[in-house]
Image (cartoon, rainbow, N blue to C red; front, side, top):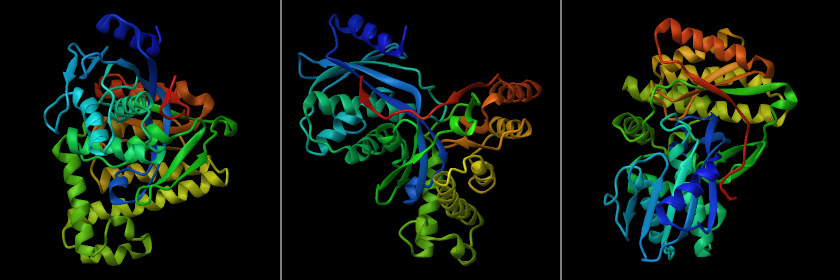
Length: 380
């Protein structure tokens, strides 16, 4: 049974009728640009084929309800304020709240969710859920919400309702990505450019390896990294660390007395430059040459931003040893997934090498698949 069929079946079971339609939004892989989004910087994600599907129909009693094939209990709510709905249902209630807070009249609906975006893997299952529900509510309500404004509404749901201090990257990717493209996003201006990302034409592929080390955003570590970046920007007298160029970095580091702030700043400044360098190479059709930038990004996340864990590092090291052109953790960190740029015919061998390294360490076996850039949120 497909994800879409699962969502329809769940809707029928829960509500005894047919949905008005199906809406889907993808998970995402961030090719490069980690933690740069909330520093007003640059990111380069692409949408995954894995997606969350929302089967949605009108609610007869004027309230909202949502069930999921991945949760035991449904969630029902009326008009709420942040904190009144918790758990996974907060992502849905948060979207309703954020639309209402933006001045829109939100239709009361019943929703059934099915998804094959791996939960807790750093592939943004939360943004996929938010984006699918947001798109459904906009369509069913006939709401005039420009495409470029939608990611910020979904982000407000996650920041202010759920309480996760994420940047705009995830929602932008889930909503605005195009098939066969990577989304070059300026997180200050929200300007985007669709960058051609045809790996197959170059004989290459991206292998995504789920370390099976659970990844969580709503915790102290993510917030601590953001706070450090804000402290550094304040000391340096800039709006955000995006305003520090790589040529200005040595002088900026000299002004930061705290070693932790120095390390966090160095990651953000150099990571922004790596995004720009990656985009320049992709524009020139030099896909294979982005590999060293991916690997340098991982080293920066490991040593300066300190957000990797052993299972993630082992996956990167073993993929590189197996011949990958570059590899890095993707996502907010402390677990989640690794991506490796490989020759297209090396997927099985690379996956086997990582699995062997995990077995030697006694880790739970990783899972892996090839990622092809897919489209953003849409009605299906």
